[in-house]
Image 1 (tube, one colour):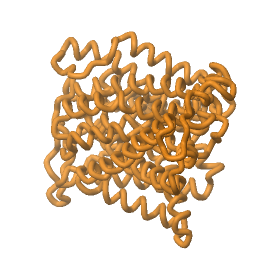
Image 2 (cartoon, rainbow, N blue to C red):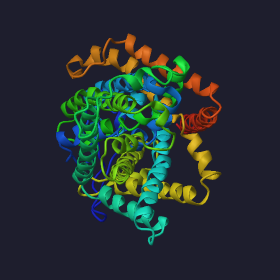
Image 3 (tube, one colour):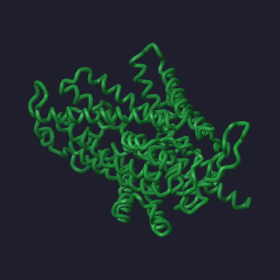
Image 4 (cartoon, rainbow, N blue to C red):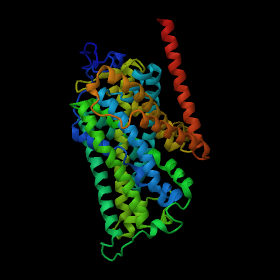
Length: 478
C-alpha cells in the first residue's frame, strides 16, 4: 500500500486512503510491521475458537440435544470449517490487515467493505466487554478483596499495553494462551478415553450405556439437534482473526495457508471429540446450562480440584479472547481508515509499525462497553449484545459471497496465487450459504434468539444506510 511521507515530528507514518483497492488483487505491501511467526499463526488458528463457549457454554447444548450434541457440533463445525477455508483461500491470495472487509470491498463494492468492517468491529468491542467482565468475575472470586471493576481495569490496561507494543508480543501472548487451551483439551480427551475404557484407578469401563440410555442418542429427536446447533454455532466465532493477523506475518500467503490447513481438522476434532467424551462418560441428563460439563466429567473420574482447574482454563480462555479481539478490532478499524471508511487520524502507525491510534480507539469503545455491562447489564448493554447476536452469521455470509465472486477473478487474473482452494467450489460455498440462511431462519422461530436476529438486522441496516449516505455525499462532492 502507498504511504504518505513520514510525520517526522510524531515519528509515525501515515497510510494512504483507498490503498486496499489500488491494485486488482491487492499485492501492495502492508504499512503495518511484520513480526508474527508461523507458530504464532498456527496456534492462533487452533486457539482462536477454543474459548468459554466450549468450556462452559456447551452445557446448554447438551441439555437440549442430549448425546445428539455430537451431531450438532459436527454440523456447526462443518459450517465453520467451510468459512475458514474460504477465508484462507482469499487471504492467501490477497493478504490484507482488513481481511474479509477488504475482500468484500473488492468483490462487491465499497458499501460491502464498509458494512462488514464496521459490523465486525462493533461485534468485537461489545464481546470484549463480556470477556473482560467474565475474567474479572473469576479473579474477584479468587481475590474478593479486589473489586471486580479493578480487575477489569487491570486487564484492559495490560492488554492495551500488549497491543501497543510490537505485534510479536501479541503473537507470543496468544501462542502461550492457545497452547494452554489446546493442552487442556488434549489432557481432557486422554483422561476421558481412559475413563471410558476403565483404565483409571477405581473405575469400570463405561461402554456405550450413556449414549444409548436415558432416551437414546437423540432423546429430543432432530429438533433437539437443531436446537443444539443454535446453542453452539457461535462458539466457533474467532477463527477470523488468524486471517487478519496473517497480513503481519513474514510470508502472509504461505503462513495463512499453513495455519488454516492445520487448524480446520484439529478444531473439529477438539470440539466433537470433547463432546463425544462428555456424553459417553456421563449421562446427558447430568448436564445443566451454565455449568461446565468438563468439570462434571473431571469430578467423576476423580481429578482433584477439577472446578478450580477448569476455572483457570476458562480464565485464560477469556483473557486470550480479550487480547485477540482487541487486536482484531484495531486492525479492522485501521484497514477501514486506510480505505477512507474511518477517520484518517487512525492511519498513523509508530516506528514499530503498530497502529496506536486504532488500538486506543478500539480499547476506548471497548471500555465504554465494559462500563455499560457493569452498570446496566440487563438494559443498555443487553440491547448492544442483542445487536451483535447474529452479526457473526452476517459476516460469514458476506465472506461466502465474496469468495464466490473473487475465486473466478483470481483464476482469471492470477491463478498462481490460489495456494489454498475452497473444497468443491462453488457447490460447497453455496451449501454453506444455505446453512447460514437456515440457522438465521431457525433463530427467527426461537423466542430466545429472535431478538438477536432482529436487533442485529437493525444494526446492519443502520450501517448500510451510513454506507449509502457516504457514497451519495461523495458522488455529489465529486
